Image 1: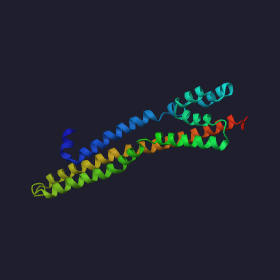
Image 2: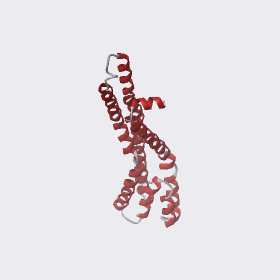
Image 3: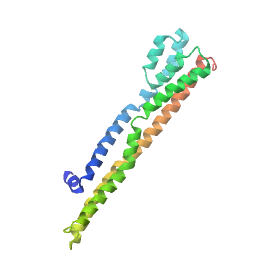
Image 4: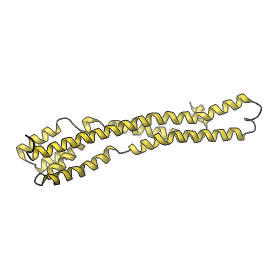
Length: 201
């Protein structure tokens, strides 16, 4: 494996760095974007039940806010229980924008790696081809050596595609996952507003 990296030339080391970064981002986002961590089941029901017993106490708001990202959205609504429906919704939307930014953290970097890896691989191949055809020994009367040099230069393109395909798959998956969490949080926050304001029995 190390001999292949050496033969492919210096551009492949940038691809190797991109692959390490993409694997690290995929692992981090896989651990961070878990439903049990982002939108814990039963949190809304527990918050509403305690609110009906003790009201929107400072302890309830603080405990809910530190519970999870969904808790931060619900806590924003609880802080404005005495206000109008519009004020409650605005505070929930502000908290939701902050949570959305957190859920999409590192996704731009992962998407960038997925987009540029094939280009980096193509660049490495072009550099390899220039070196092959610029060398009088490789481009001489030995077609076998020339074919071998071209195949080595193509390692860069192949490696770039190997990095880009899973990175793009996980990027799309994480974006869809974050969007589904945001929709779920929005629905639960609206339900909280309606339950707190007795709009829904």
